[in-house]
Image 1 (tube, helix red, strand yellow):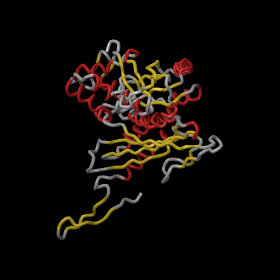
Image 2 (cartoon, rainbow, N blue to C red; image 1 turned 120 degrees about the horizontal axis):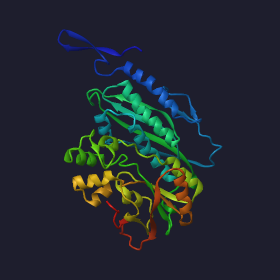
Image 3 (cartoon, rainbow, N blue to C red; image 1 turned 180 degrees about the vertical axis):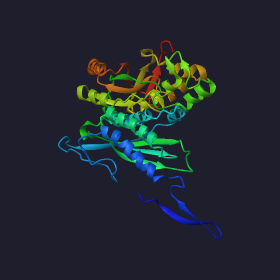
Image 4 (cartoon, rainbow, N blue to C red; image 1 turned 180 degrees about the horizontal axis):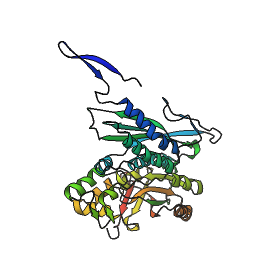
Length: 367
């Protein structure tokens, strides 16, 4: 590939041949990164994908024989400051899973099947092996979600980001039948809330978690934590659980009204987004014990319960709102798919228009 160059004058009478590489951008490194990531991208595929990585646009053929009146759903998200932990540990092949989880599990909330995802990786300097590791994680996440990695962009930002720095974001697209879109309009009094366990912190609240555990608690990322049975770094880099296929299985076999993906804002705030006027979701804290990482943060940082619950998922990554007659079936489906789940609460009428649409009651056992 021909290097882009130009001539500039740095001082009177002195001509310097400036190059893109001298300015900090290596086209060759970018090409090498593309070659290294191609095998991982190829693993996250679907039969509807046309062409391969490297084109100007990704092509995906909608199979109209599958849908009568398809509605496309789209979601964009990132990983947040969990990336700081990955960079500190020089472990880069798991945050891509987190990225996919944050996108596809927003799609499935409305009943959409994730079709494809496109990523955006911003780096201070293209380090081909590191970019390939990031895409490896994204590819693994797409495989778990059943969607294709349709392409993306790796952008080099010298002078704006340090050489080892990077950030991730992605946009995903899914499809759902028009008459099968899930949402608050389907929720009824008496519906039951079924919790699906998180794998830990997931990808929210890391600014507070890092502040408490690393700065206040002074626990090194390499330090073994007895409550975790592993190092703090391993706990904090535990990939976000991806629920997309599990939610689609529930939709296929039970009467699901809607889902709530428990991300930033916590359990009550995210559940409130899918509860309509006149109803209230009541959540019983006594039905589960949050994982040790949450109690450690609360204790070391003296973080009160309200702050914990509006910052972290507290052990619940997804909530299904299901018809009461389908509760046993829904729990059986999730058990068969090895997703820890339990009855979290229920939906009740609410005569107070100013009352919160979702509230937590009681206390966690042993928390």
